[in-house]
Image (cartoon, rainbow, N blue to C red; front, side, top):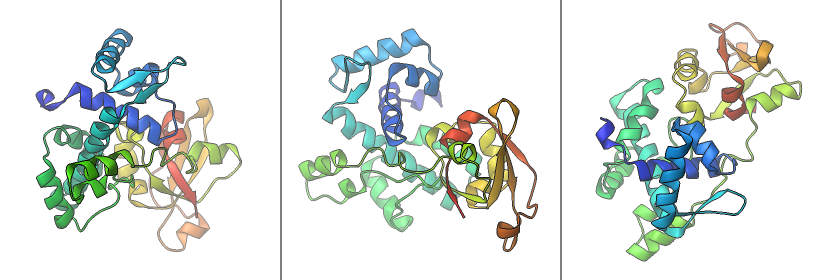
Length: 252
């Protein structure tokens, strides 16, 4: 399955993810996200810069060119449509959906995307609550209109959403509900299965508190009146500061 992974597309999507989360895209952030070595990331970014897909700015931030952004939005669109198919139609466990979609995103044609839009009743978000970008490009009348639609996709979509750890630092304990699970959380092979099992990723209400070493304890509440009373609704889940700081939530 590793043969299906396109390194260039993976890097472009990672830069777009960082933009979406309001994190300045830099080579160091790509190292963290993809767990590639520093030299490997530097070499790949240099090659992509020579290919006209991105630019490394004087302050070391990475900026996508129009060609790079067009490809990045297409890949992310395919990724999130694949996630909807895997979750809604095939019935794959939510904890497995992200990794599988990482393979599908590199081999899906636009004809398949259009059929998926019909099959899935034109979804606007992934099963993790993440917006699907560039959908207007699938219905554009010509190639240039499609490109313009891709380039017009907004960046920083999550930058304004409250993060769980930030709310806890301000003294709130909930109850909360998850409204968006960024890619950096989806890729966590430990936290995602636990959160999915507790129902938190499916919209279940929960309370939370900061534990020692800045880890966070999450306690799902019972359905119905439990969302208000704080009644115990399931097993406690412990997540890292990194996951808690990325998880987008709403106070309910």
